[in-house]
Image 1 (cartoon, rainbow, N blue to C red):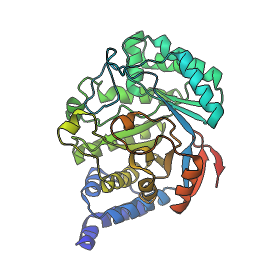
Image 2: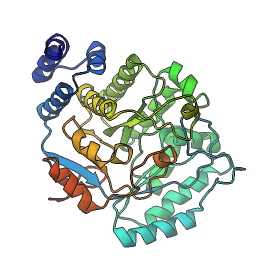
Image 3: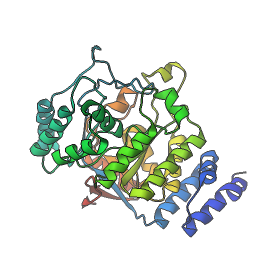
Amino acid sequence: MALLEQASTLGPLREKIEAGERLDLEDGLAILESDDLLSLGELADLARRVRGGTDEVYFVQNLYLNQTNVCRVKCKFCAFAATRKQEHAYTITPEELVRDAVEQCAATGFTEIHMVNGENPHIGFDFYVDTIRSLAQALPDVHLKCYTASEIHHMTTLSGLTHEEVLRELKDAGLGSLPGGGAEIFADRVRALIAPGKEHPEIWFHVHDTAHRMGIPTHCTMLYGHVETYEERVDHILRLREQQDRTGGFLAFIPLAFHPENTVFERRGWRHTTGADDLKMLAFSRLMLDNVPNIKAYWIMMGMPMAQVALHFGANDVQGTVMRETIFHAAGARTGTEQQIGELVRFVREAGRIPVQRDTLYNELRRW
């Protein structure tokens, strides 16, 4: 039966991949509807190599920071956000944040700070500019990958500035790139169900498009495994691909599995995605996103053993050391909150790949 399915649905995909042809909506649905997981992995690895991929697998030494968890939006999938009156709410001053980051850098020598926050309505735009400027001055050799498109849009509300003006001030202060969060699923139906207070997807695209045209690279994501359909997953990916055609500013794509613990969805019976689901999504991402060079297997979400397997399903990046990740752990992630470089190197080697430590912009720093 598997051979029959491969001949009828995956065979044409292989022909397209080998010919360098772009996959379409129907191809995307065929991938997601297929149960031939091993063939999908083999196809994704073929696509990676046909498009110039090598045996190198990248990781970055990075520190995760969350300056505030106070948020105006009540996203139903989020276990991180708080209102100001809740006991676990916090907002860290720029001075405190910088002091902590400097101490951590002295201990570990990270090259990237990855920072996202709640959309705190009780602070001003100057708070963000001061934070970036202070971090850049204290750690001039560290790349600052900070603030989702949703946060950037929130800053326009706080300041009365445009997206471009907000990004210009942050860039002048030392911002290096944007993470890809806030994308969730672009379909209006889904957003109305899981994040009714969040801005329209076109705003997410406008922020990233503006950043790309200003020379600020960004990342892109998809949060899957909640209420979305296969058609909505494919639509999401195709929209990202069209944006990359226009500006070429996405450095990497990260598929993020929905973690339901401590959210309303857990009470409604949702469970974690399976390993097969996660591997299929990585293969799907590599096959469909022919113009985004890097696909990340986010080990903090899936664990390092599964991330090893993912390197044979189209992924070529395992993210990084990820010191102090809190958002996925608030939603039930069981992995550690930090991975030592030696362990990352071992896992990549044992997967039959070449470990390469990179900076945020994928410049090689060291290889094993």
